[in-house]
Image 1: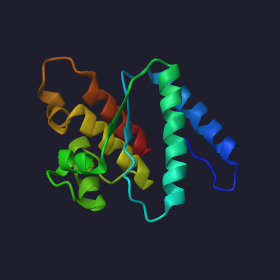
Image 2: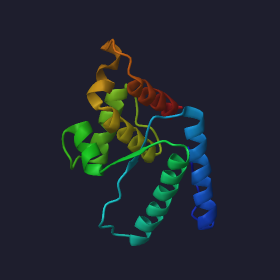
Image 3: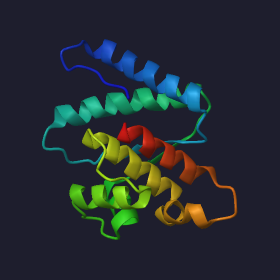
Image 4: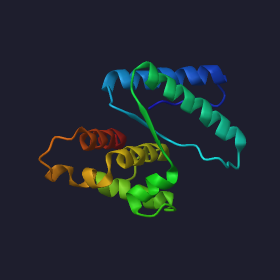
Length: 152
């Protein structure tokens, strides 16, 4: 998990994010990196700017590794998991736990958000039925591995 401290200089924080994401990409060799789209109206514009910086660094790490990036709106992620684009965080957490067989929601909350993005990209029906499918499909296995890691 990549973590920075708000007290660190911005350049140092972005370097940590880049190095962390590049390390994960190098270790796991994903077919795609999935991120949440920024929405246009933020109550705190500074947060949006900082998120934009972080997303840019993630795109850079993925691009430098030759890995494509897909992005989804929060509404699409919620609708994909719950059937409701305005679902609460708690509803999304419950669906992540149900689909991945977790006894409790991973912490911190952004881990659940990342799993929700991965499930949205992989398709929740494929995740829920992966144990009964004959066809080899790596996405459910990868999401399940992420979930196991999150439970630690």
